[in-house]
Length: 289
Length: 348
Image 1 (cartoon, helix red, strand yellow):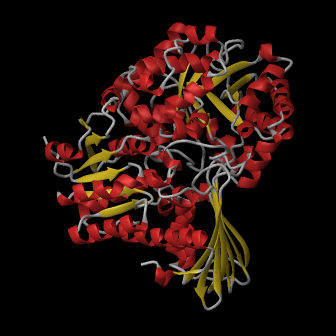
Image 2: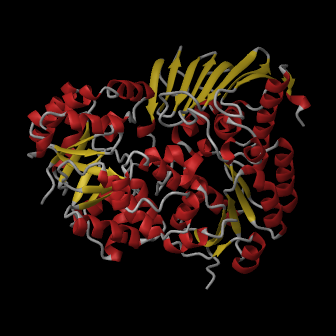
Image 3: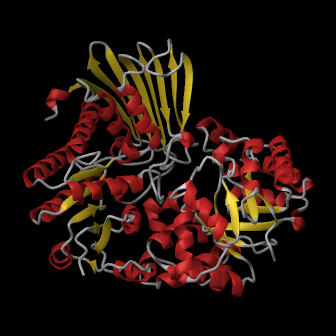
């Protein structure tokens, strides 16, 4: 099933701002109350935006559960939740962080997800890396099993690590599992679009990509020109993110740049209810979605 | 076949930073990854299955003999740095050491002397030297845009240790200390790069969760009435990512540096900058990296080291610089431990 044209992102809900700490702190505090996320979900829904790109952080999951029209929502989880693991990784290692999260699962779930074996770091180290990746994918998606999913996005840090390790198997496994076992569309997030896409072509992997695209060239690697050329010529399905250049562009400034670009969808992080109405309205009008 | 136009790089230590540096080396056109080493033999399986096309060694001597690297990135806990540096330097291998240079001031001195005597290219992983807003602030300060500096205050905060934690990072014997050396050293590098070493230091440290310090505050005296403050904590809520802040007061105005921007307030137009406010957002600064993984600046850091291995020039942050940062760290630790002002002339 094709992705919706406009997608709501969850960066603001997770306290991310590229503009200033003041704004990031405001987001952290404001969206620590799930009702404030629900209000943005409502506003987006009123404008027909029902696809939500999100990670399984606590406040976001609480808001999804609380959203009265949750049955209309189509979630696109970003997995794994790299930030959460990174915070625990220095103490427990990446896999130790997985184990600590697994504590919240019932024994039935652990058995079903193959997590019972992950009881000690030593046994984890001796496991096959690809087996672990599979377990991690199933484990992360278990949080979303009660909701309708529109696709699954591999976190940019994992995509870019696989890319720089020259490892097509990680991406291949992700693609196969999501398509074959879950019947969903796999999507790769990246911060290195212009390096990733030629490599995917060489590896003969065809998969949608979610990447930064904006008139400022913000986070467009290796360069704005190379990314624009690939968007124009590659024929890959592209989900544009960071289209407001981390908040440095207004919707009125940002969307005309995208109007003639071959992108299938645009994901937008929203920081308030008025911002939702304004940003999505301008997007719909300029992008003719 | 060996490609002599590229630098053969080995990565030693396959923890979080080692994994990232290994991946980055793979993306640098002037480098080729020739070996990976870690004392944990089980990681050989990870190296193979992660698709890393370089042999794995659990013995560094064997790695040097067989893989013959031109350069190595040392990404181990700091207590291991000196011994590894001595082994590699004996074979003339150029070296990058993740920050801090060493776990103690004494070990850092030996490393700096080693680099000098062996004439190897040497770099320390103080990432902020390659971070856009920090580079811009450095240029503005060097150009004297705010005029003579008479005061600064600075902080480095992160939400990282919110309870008792285990691991080498929290073990003084392996890491050399806590928040000051592990995270605050990034800011101390900036202070050293912008203002040089102070004449004296007075510091206090705090212990909330760890056996090493979770927070510290220092007053840095530069003479002629110039003072600066340094504040670090890894136990503050609300800092999802590490956050640097530096506020400089000069005779012609102020400069504020954060992760997100450099902001000037000038009493009169000066050196091409207007009177009152100018904000330079990180987003608006030109990108100097063709790849990004882990954190902004890491690719530039590794590429700078690799390029200096080719042209023999000094990288942006040398071990001599790393030693000066370590001198500052040592002064802070001595002052906090003995509750007295430490003159930098005592730290030698």
